[in-house]
Structures are given as structure tokens and as C-alpha cells.
Image (cartoon, rainbow, N blue to C red; front, side):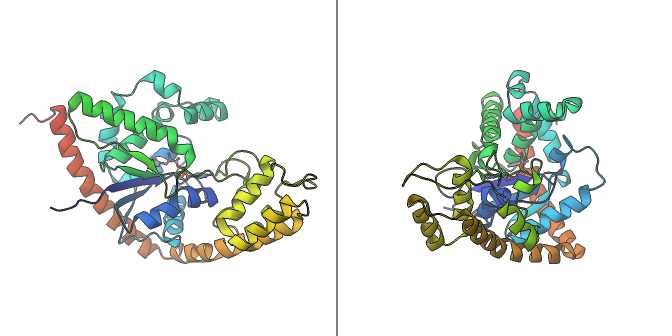
Length: 334
Ligand code: TYM
């Protein structure tokens, strides 16, 4: 029997530069998954319109996100790498799913409530139904695995609900989509200021971008909050110190981590040295990605070809699903 590969889908909004959170929460998994699964990875340009209606910089941002994904190791010949707006079927499925999504549950979504707080002047219907569009992206390819960071957990739960609701009402079309990470738990990369997660929109100095130059990386890391160090052996780390160790675990060697763990537990840690080391390890990690991404961004012909290839694969999969959807819904009148 032909063993069908499980299907994987994920997306990133083109609202700014990719950062370390995007890499360790999402892109790192994409790169591994493309070897094992049938993968659809997308630039979520339509989602970005919910908060960034001005489209002047969209093209540049889409090119940048694509370049950065490829620089991280995504291969447009292995995965379908595409733009959300190139797959018109998304909008059709989004419409159908909107009839199965309730105002109450949408209003309770954490990301919606955050956005309402941040931009009370632009609480549009697209923002409210953001998780419905995301569910459409995912189930349009009948995906089972969705590699995302921890912040997307609730959106995935909603996607599962919408898929199940559709199946109950109209018949089994969609597998249940689940958030995925290699390793036990979904990842949350903290910011350098010791509060919250690394993000595109919040404190810029607390976020390490894959496009930051070496001096900027060092500067940001050196600014990370520390204190005068522990006074009791083996004491619990405050959050902001735990975060620095957490970042070190992403990019530094086991020996380096063991040294600073030991120094911390023996109350001889020098945070200045630790941050200097972390800065260098971050530079080592980010520089090759930044340089590769720049090269790709300066090659619009290659990007165009990659996008076209991706769109073609994604549309093919989308068309097949929408045939099943219309059939199941009884929208076939002849
Ligand atoms: P976005 O663009 O905010 O983030 C892209 C990916 O990066 C992950 N991420 C993080 N992971 C760990 N730590 C962090 N600090 C961190 N910051 C961001 C996110 O979890 C995400 O995986 N709604 C989505 C885009 C989207 C999508 C989809 C995702 C649209 N359609 C379909 C999956 C499937 C978003 O805004 O991601």
C-alpha cells in the first residue's frame, strides 16, 4: 500500500524582519520537516492586512521573509514556499468557515484582545476572524502538523474546533491539525529585557533579528538585564537571568552552558563575561543567515521563480480540497 506522507502547513506574517523567536519557534522545524513530510509554508500577507492596511512596504517585506526562510535552510524544491494571497481558494474556505465560527469564541481569543488593547482605533472584522483565516490556511491542505511557537497554541485549538465542526456538519473532509515541535513542548523564545516573548512589534532592543549586524547583536545582548549575582549557592534564578540562560541554550555549546551554570551555582558568575560570550555565539549563529538572506534578496528572478513554484504546488493541493469541500457541503448543483 502507498504510505501517504503526513501533511505539514505553517505561516509567518510579513510585518517585519524575522527574529530569533520565529527561527526557534517555527523555521527550524520547517527545515527538518521538509525532509520527512509534504510541506506547505507560506508568507501570511493577508493576515498582515488586519493590522497593517498600508501596503507600500508589503512587497519588500514579502521578499525579505521569503529570503530569510530560504537562508535558514528552507528549500523551495522540497517544500511549497508560497504567498497566501496567491491561493484564492483560501478566501473561499475562509468564507465557509466563518459561518461555523461564533462571535463569542472569537472575541475571547487572547491575540484578539491584545490587538484591541494595542489598536482600539482599528478593531476590524478581519481581526476578529483572524483565527478563522488561519484555520482556512491550514485545513485547505488537509494538514495534520503545524510547526509553530507557543504563542500560536490557542489559534491551533480553534483550527481544530473549526475543522471538527465542519466534519460533523458536512462529513469528514479534514484531519485534525495539531501544533508541532520536535521536542516535548512548543517553544517560547524570551525577549532580552526579561519580560514576555521576543516579538516583531514590541521592544526592538529586546529582539534579535536575523538581519541585525554584528555590532547591533553585541549591543543588544550586552543591554540584557542582570543584577549583582546570587549570594546563596544553588539559588533559583530570577526570570531575566533564566532568560539569558535560555537564550544561551539555543546557540552556545554545552561546555559554555555548563561553565556558566556552575559559576551561577557557586556564586562566582560574571554576567558581563557571560553576555560577551552569548553575544559572540549569537553573532556566529546569525551572521551566515543574514549574509545568505541578503544574497537571495538581491536576486529577484530567483525569488519570483521560487514563489511561482510554491504557488503552483499550493494551488493544486487547495483545488483538490475545495472539490471535496463543495461536494460535502452540497454546493454541487449540476
Ligand atoms: P507570526 O508571524 O507572529 O510568527 C511566525 C512564527 O514564529 C513563531 N514565534 C515564536 N516562537 C517562539 N518564540 C517567540 N518569541 C516567537 N515569536 C513568534 C510563531 O509561533 C509562529 O510559528 N498567525 C501566525 C501566522 C499564520 C499561520 C497560519 C501559522 C497565518 N496562517 C497557518 C500557522 C499556520 C502568526 O502571526 O505568526
